[in-house]
Image (cartoon, rainbow, N blue to C red):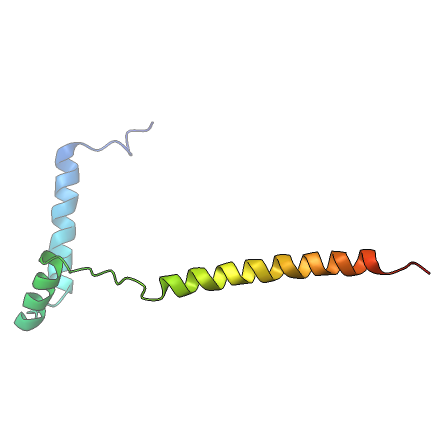
Length: 89
């Protein structure tokens, strides 16, 4: 490594201070809206309540799935019965 890339901790602190001075001179200081800051503080520090709603029609959903499976199996069985009952020409 070359010596140009190795910086002492003092040089690093000086560069940060120079950067802060440049930013302070080039940027305009803004006073934030107090209501916004308070609202943001409350949102960040207060945990939100979480509610999980139960399905009311769980029984109906299970019945629908069961009926669909039964209908599909019945259709497959009927197709096989029809195919074997036909005489081949």
